[in-house]
Length: 179
Image (cartoon, rainbow, N blue to C red; front, side, top):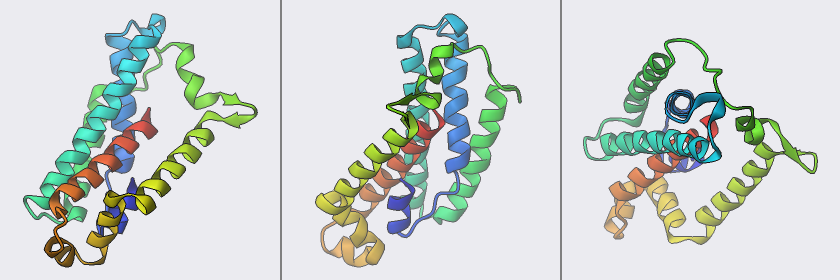
C-alpha cells in the first residue's frame, strides 16, 4: 500500500497509528460485543473486518483531503497520525486488551509447514501487488500519476479518483497489519 502511495508521489505518515487503531478496534469489538475470551470465530472475523474497514475509511478520508482540498499529503497524514493514535489510546483507555480468545493468535503466532502465517500473507500480498502494478490499467495509472499528474489528467486518467483509491488501499492494508 505504501509503495503505491510513494509511486504516486505521496506519503502516508499515519500507517503506524492506523495499525494501532485497527488492532484496538478489533480487540474492543471482540472483548465488548463478541464475548471476550468466549468469542466465536464469526465474532473474531467481524472484529477484524471492522478494524480493516475503519482504516480503509481513514485512508479514503486522507485521499479526499489530498485530492479535493489540495492539502499536502505530509500535513494530512501527520494530522491523521495524531488523531488515529489518540483514538486508539482512548479506545483502550491507555491499557492493553487481553480479554481475547487464545485462537486469535492463529494468524499472528502460528505457522504452516514451518512457515509463519505472516510470511505467507506477505508473499501473497507481494504477488498481488506486483500483478496489480505491472499488469493492470490501475497500476499504469498510478505510475503515470507519479510521473506527471497533470499529463496523466490530460491523458484522460481520473487522477483524484485513483489517488483516493491508492490511499484507501494503503489504509486497508495498514488495518490488515494491525489485525
